[in-house]
Structures are given as C-alpha cells and as structure tokens.
Image (cartoon, rainbow, N blue to C red):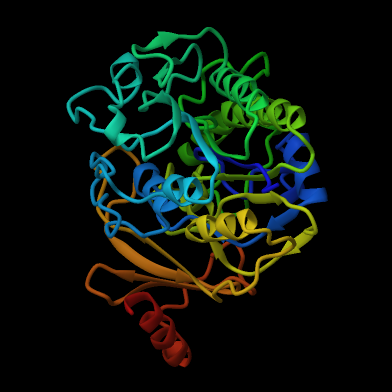
Amino acid sequence: MPPNILWIVTTQWRAQACGYSGDPNARTPCLDALAAEGVDFTQAVTPHPFGPFARAALLTGLESPGNGVRGYFDPLPPGTRTIAHEMRERSYLTAFFGKWHLSVRDPGARLTGDEHARAVVAPQYRGGFDFWEGFESGFLLNDPWLHGTLLPEPARFEGYQSDVVCGRARAMLGACERPWFAVVSLEPPHPPYGAPASGVGARPTGGLVLRGNVPLRGADEARCRADLSGYYAHVEATDRAIGGLVGALPRDTIVAVTSVHGDMHGSHGLFRKGWPHEESVRVPLVVRIPGGAGRDDRPVSLLDLPRMTAAWAAGATGLPSGLPGAARISMPSVVRLPDQCDRIWAGVRTRARKLILKEDGSPWLFFDLDRDPLELTNLAADQTRAGEIAGLAASVTR
C-alpha cells in the first residue's frame, strides 16, 4: 500500500525560530519531536521569499515566473500542472486545506480582512486537487472563512485558524480509505502579530533574545521586540495545532513541515520578507519518513519537495539522493508594500556560500556563511573571491 503523504505549509516561519534549531524564544515541542525522529534539512531555502511566488513554485516544482506567477496579484493559471496531478496519476486521492493565495484577487481591496478572506476561489483555480477547502488570503488568524468542495459559499468557523484548518483536515483524512496526499496550508505565524494566539500569551518583550545582527538601542530594536512578542505566541500555538494533526494520523504517514518564507524581524535593520538574507530565505523543513533520521546539511529548495514526494509515493525511504549542490533563490518582481524588498534580484545558496545578483546581473551581496553565519561581512567587493563569485554567478544565470 503506498504511504499517505502530508505537507504542512506555514507562512513567515523562519528556520531560526524553532526550538530544535537553538532559538531560546521558541516553544515548538511538536516540531522538535519531528526533527528528533525524522530528517532536519538544516539548509532548506524557499525559491522566492514571498508568498504567491513560493506557493506557485512549491505546487508546480517550477520557479516563478516560469510557472505563470510573475507579480504578487497573478493567479496560478488554470490548467497548470501541479503536484496534485502528479499524485492523482499515482492513484492518490489529493486534498488541500487552508490558505491558497493563488487565485484572482482585487488589488484595490485591503489585504487584511474579510474581502480577501471571503473571496471565492473558482474550481479552475484550485490547482487540480480532488478535494479543496480553504480561503484565498485575508490574514484572519482567528475565525476564518472557509469554502470549497463541500462548502459552495464561504462559512465562518470559530476558533484559531491553525486549530480550525488542522481540525478540518484531521476529520477528513481520518475517514479516507485510500492512499492520500494532502496539503495543509496555514497563515500563522504571519502578521498581524498582535492577534490572539489560541490562549498562548505574548512573550514579555524585555526577555526576548535577539539575533546578533539586529541593531540595538533604537527604533529597530523596539519594533523587533514588539513583533517577536506576538510572533512567538503564534509559533507556539501553531506548533500545538500541527501536533494535534500529526498525532491523530497513522505513524507510517510521511509528514513534511515547512514554510513559504521567513521574516527579517529587524535583522540588518530590515523587516518582513522578500529580502535575500537568511532570516527571509531560509525555512524550516522537517520530514518524518521511514528509514530517515538526523540532520541533512545539503542545500535543498522547496522546489525539490515535489520530486521527493513523487519518490516517496514510488516507495523510496530514507534520505533523498541526487539533490543538487546549490539552490537558486530570487525575487521575480517588486511587491510595493511597506517594509518589503525594494528590488528584483536573483541568487544562489550553497551550504556555505550565498551570492545575490542585481537585476542587471552584477554582484550585489556575497557571503561566506561558514565564517559569518549572521552575514555581517559582505564579500562582494573582495577581489580575491572574483573567481568564486563568477562561478556562482554562472549557476544563477544558466
């Protein structure tokens, strides 16, 4: 019998914000347990540190804009081949729950609130899943609106969004009698960070331990502490919801937990996402799979997850083989929202190096991550590294 396979995809959960990765602020017992018994991909990155681009890449295995999503408000084109088509051809029932963020949206509507949360995602925009129940966006972390296969009109469900979506998925998947592949997509710990977090209180700001690249004793530090106070509450609440879902499934279910991007939270004096720094591009990726356990320090992209999933469906166990030695990352267009990255860029991330090119192809940032994991020193102007930079640049543009 082929294994059941579950992707749990969060939003804005950076790789550094997990207990198992050493963050003293993070209370993540579920993810810690998964990392202990499964595979922790320590160098996983998003291909694009912004929601719609990353989601399109994750579902299709293709980078933006090659998958049809060039701008923030572009939908995934109807008929696009996704992981749902791949898995259905392997006789799986396919299901999607939660945040979609790849349908037609009104650019003039407020991003946070009922208008986007209640927008109906037409069947042709649902990525080919057999069962679909979710919402377009809206960032309503409490009392979400859901619609889909069994709910033709949006209906409001009381409770914390992660609890509601995980609970709906648990009920449906628990009753399924054939092999299934499912995606559970959650907005937390995305802003608004001040929203209630299922009974988890905000952290005292003064007790938070900040990353060493956050400027101190100024407005950046104050804002960072205020944001992280609520952020870590949502991290804890969502970890608990994930634990409730994973714990209700058969132990032989393959589970992958990740995020579409991170959050700068004041590192380098920057906030939110889209930036080419580690806090924005590196994401958690923990996989519970038979025969696999421990750390995997190879660079891996969310673009690799569809290929891994197809291999698991075909009976592969243990650590995946044949992963490339580098992962490409980029911002294909500027998203003109407050705090987000203000330029187009493309780059490559190896285990120990990261090169970022400007839109014209010239070097912008180059870091030796082995020597400087906080990216305090930009080596792009170091002429002794010219050959290394040129080699990496060729892998970005090929």
